[in-house]
Amino acid sequence: MSNLRGYLGLIALSAALAACGGKKEEAAAPAEAPAAAAPAADAAAPAAATKVAADATDTLDGTKFADMKGDAAAGEKVFTQCKTCHVIDPGVNRIGPSLHGIIGRKAGQIAGFSYSSANKESGITWTPEKLYQYLEKPARVVPGTKMAFAGLAKGQDRADVIAYLTSATK
Image (cartoon, rainbow, N blue to C red; front, side, top):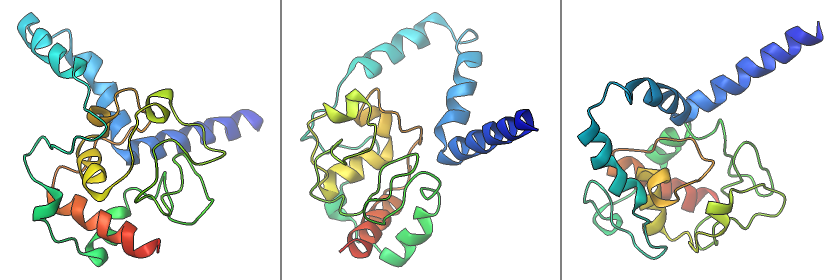
């Protein structure tokens, strides 16, 4: 019976990580890598080596937070995909840390949460602009982060989530 509980727990954890978006893609990447031509692997190397500065806010899609008008109600709906790992309740950490009061907070600073050293040492302060950049592709902004979420491709979704986090955690 204890083996069954352990197995079910493993399934639940796998489902939670898959809901975040990143683990499924990471699992597929190694299978695709051998089939890729050598030049493609070389082309990916400079992107992986490039570290985004803590105060930089450039995005891959070229959009800017300042050009967006966030909708908190729409952001609450988009945030449902984040709820597997994060909540907005103060002091409540799950797989990810509480996002209560994230705007203006330094990265890696919630007591009692085990952050990656990459996150703790990033030097980031979560401004709306920096969060907008991060939510596009977290691993680009903080290489080595434990956050498995692939990101929000649509700039409007990112702006909406930030509007929700700002309004819900005042």
